[in-house]
Length: 525
Ligand SMILES: [Zn+2]
Image (cartoon, rainbow, N blue to C red):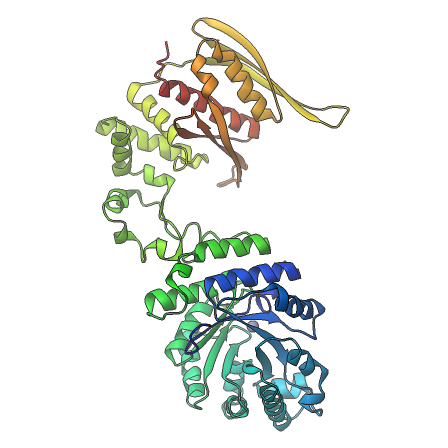
């Protein structure tokens, strides 16, 4: 079990699941809980048993299906209804019977909410807290209290808000989590109010929403003011603008503030965990997410390229490996003079200043059309050769190509391609069949050229990626195709961009074959 001095409390399965468009099955929730436990969080709030049948099922299945190594499950629920005993309230009974070692009770701490939403007296609200907390404690569960609308409540009636904190702590609640339920707080004011709550000598936690874009900053400010329990959601899921992103909070506290919250090996899995949870929720990962986003350590700084190569730490705030991420050098990295020179040297070319200038201009122009050279080294090298050698001689010239996709009577889809090429003074017409149009084109072009270049028999298309790039600056959307090829000894990638997906594929294919021939030592004649 995790150290109890500081709590990392996840509420993805309850509060995070409120995100628009998110719909988690019980199996999804169990899968997410396993990932969070693997990361090393201390508490996983599973939902509201008794109020939601799916959550009742989650807790019952969790008993037999979840083997948690670090985390404890928490059941979420409300204090008893006004005017009944906690022991007689069926919703409190559902919390008791959930089997969760921890119960997190939500309670009103804003005087106007007590009167208008709960329709009871301020005194009865305190009695509900006192009675429910002490009842569950007596039944053997650990109790935390979520003080709902605490910050707005404090601003409306500070004495009453603090009285809620005091009452819960005296009744035996271990943590009073102060909730910025509407998410409207800013760090400085929030910190002052947390400080006041800490002054009651209750153990204070923090639960923030991101409506001001400050959920993580507010959480850190609360910790600085004395909170020792942080709540948040995986990937910042949650309704409206989301909850505090628990991954960002943990990484910040552990790497910047020296807290020992999760095992170092687990922190190094954080990027993987974040993406694995996105797979379960089916929410596209935010590539710009701090620490775990695809772009979190991606550099496009052409000017800085050479310095980055000498010492990457000059341009990054942490070593990305600490959170399982990688530094990436992007396309425009190529567009810097220094990096183009370096890349040319790496490929065995000494570039003159004119060549470098010319190549930088070409790369920039092609990038603006949607090409990317970061992942397409072979295309970059062909471009470099064109620049250095003038328009290089072609191994083959294309007269035309066409592809037919046919759905047969039996419902089978077959593709057939015909290519017409000129090579070594001959006109060659060849056809190829395949399970898809690109596969058929690939076969056709190789049949056409294999008699002249037998080494093409070894060439294989091993990966094919397609992306639709949204139009920019008034242009239409285009398709980018990346093809990875292999000749048994090495792999290389080429890129094509066009409005039509087959056209883009053809470009990448033509370059893949050309590069394969160059690799085999074939000069075009
Ligand atoms: Zn919330």
